[in-house]
Length: 182
Image 1 (cartoon, rainbow, N blue to C red):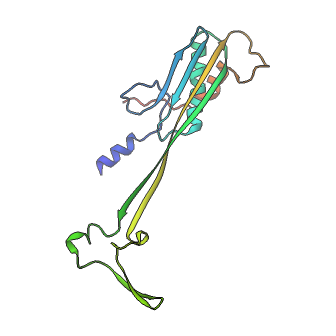
Image 2: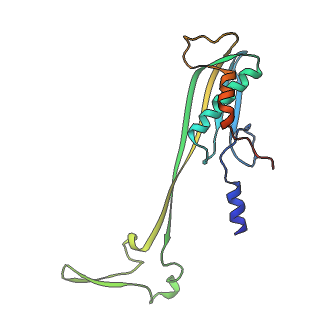
Image 3: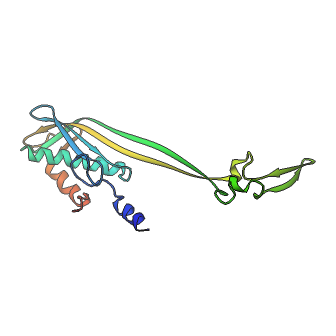
């Protein structure tokens, strides 16, 4: 029971952090400098991080990078978001191990009369509906990437996908989840 509680305590969405291999919680931001005023910014979440959070953290990192570089606003020139979806199906028998192979001649079974014929059903027959339970779950993981171009001075109003870096930082800061100290 203690191990289960410890594992659940570690199960947390990706906080706003740099992406470094071997961290307690996987995922985070990274950037690549493409030129003096151009960067490719990326944020990867784990399976507990929503798409909206991944998008917000990407935008926050772009704004933070813009201010740290001495610029006032940035424009997103290219943006993609990828979703990795995996579905897991776990089947388990309702009768194992109690009625396993060691009890070959004693298993729950029923006889029924249908269509003028007596039939027998038991858990190891062909009907998977009665003999197996299934647990089906779909896991999603989101990763967003944007190429940004940074600018100084007043932000142009005719530019699409342009953001005032300081305003983005102020607007998103209350919703940012920071890494917990270990």
